[in-house]
Amino acid sequence: TDSTSSNEPATHLLKLGVGVGYGNRWVSVSYLPRLLLGMRGGELVMGVRHGVVGRFFLNLVALEASHQLLFVGPRAENALLLTGSVNAIALIMLLGALKR
Image (cartoon, rainbow, N blue to C red; front, side, top):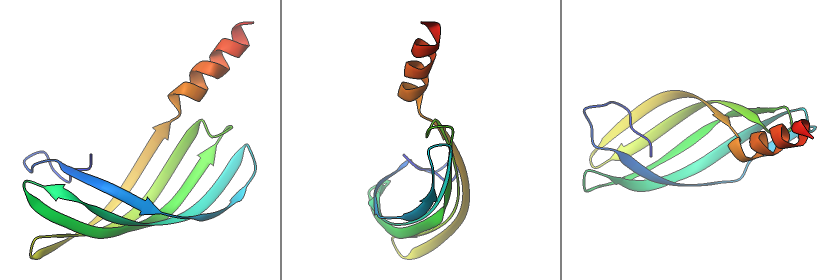
């Protein structure tokens, strides 16, 4: 679920894309363009998002800086996004292996 502000209805997006990248198991960087399709408050949403993704420490942590252009009904919306994520399952497995 993506949302640009708290007073708008939630935007649910299907994201489809293929990226290109370089790195190893400890650090990698990739460029990832995506097509977006979804709904917001009963309106069709279409757009594109492209950005650079860095993945670190056996893919446990990821940071992404991207630009998004959405067409919601008759208007266009631009956004710069900075997101981070933690691979919780891999982190739990790593912590479990360290306890042994």
